[in-house]
Image (spheres, rainbow, N blue to C red):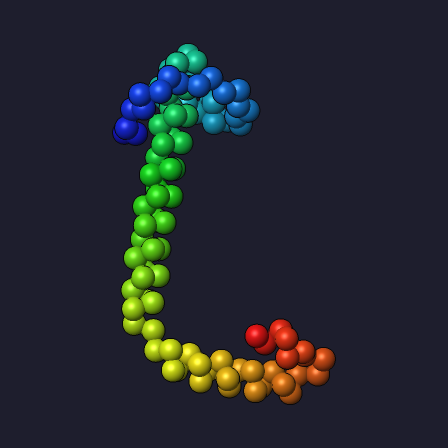
Length: 96
């Protein structure tokens, strides 16, 4: 469950797919309060998942930065730039 904010809730007009509204009504019952609560919970779950993925990505980025072999990367980039020189119409500016 999403942590409750101390701020008052905001009424926001939204447009929903009728099939989604029918699903909620069929599953949980009719009523604006039920639909509002369902949408709020679904949005909160989405935010939690995005935050979880962002944190996981940061862990991977940090780990990659700690273990990168800069010398190897420099050698690979030099090799790529050398190969690109043979591509007709390729400018050296794009390789930087």
